[in-house]
Length: 157
Image 1 (cartoon, helix red, strand yellow):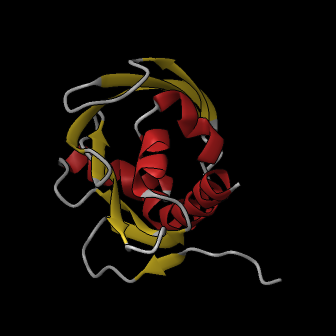
Image 2: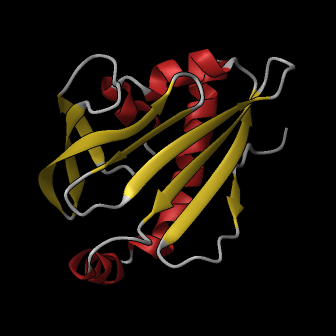
């Protein structure tokens, strides 16, 4: 049996990355996990989310949710949902203003194409400096692909 992989997409846009996978589950089941901030650590491919610390049990546009994170040192971050389309798209950002999005496309055969997008293209200079300093752009595609593989395993298992 071959190893499950997500496709890392070629993005010719600064400070942006994306990955995609097909999940053999309905969009609603996948979206339920994405819209539950308590579930995020269970499919985080970066290993940086340690726990959900605040927020509603189901996200909505304008909802705020906090995460305990660790990249070398522990920290906490508050995210705000800036786009929410039930079973189709969810996007959030935090104080550095880059966004994380999940876009779901129902393939009509019980499967769903899920694309995760990191967009730091329209962020302030300090945020751009931070992305370069931390190497986030270089490692995000791999971490996103790992997250999607974990999401697939959760939704198909």
